[in-house]
Length: 280
Image (cartoon, rainbow, N blue to C red; front, top):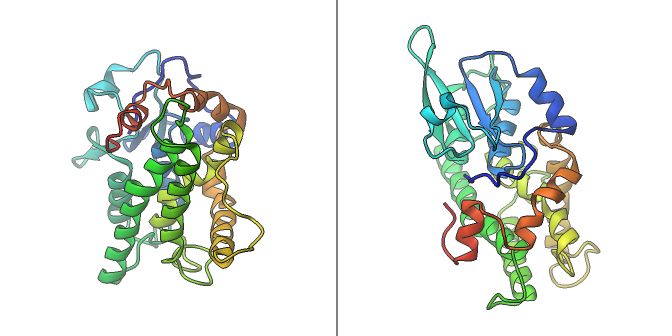
């Protein structure tokens, strides 16, 4: 979850703007969002994949509405307003993107009404998916921010940050179904969703950091097959319709992440990375 940099534009663009407009009508299930936020995109992709009716509410960073702050006084996104009672006129809040995604998976489990399951039915396989979602959240995502927030003043080099991100990605790839294209094979799951927003944002590291993310594309070397499997996953995931439909224009992300590249962002994630602490 993130705290908003108040100079950011306050509306979606591109495909995300079209999707947000389609789901702007009043509905008791509301996703309070920030277009720039990868944690929001996790939850939004899940709503799309599960074919769940909802209302998309963009949180204006200049003016947070009282109804939103009543649900989440810290003003963090994503926040899911969950209807309660027979009429659904009252809402209770959920935050934390992975928790929201699992709630949506559990609460909208009827595949005759909604989209397919995003976690396996087998208890062990479900637990295994959660294990690798945790790896993404506690290893890969922090390494992404450590790399993009690198400056000359850091006690670690750009190369060290790049190697750390690559190492954590490799650990995940080794656990993927060997054929793919997704983590579980042909089945798109919450494991894929949990990493998809940062996979889409890898181009920002190429844009802002000398040498970029440095992940090999030619399939050469001792890790060539591993990286070929990564790019197979990457292509299938970033081209997934739900991922593309929840994406604003590239130019907007370049603007938003300039603060991260300069290590001046006020977000809680950026501050935690700057201080060498675990992400909130």
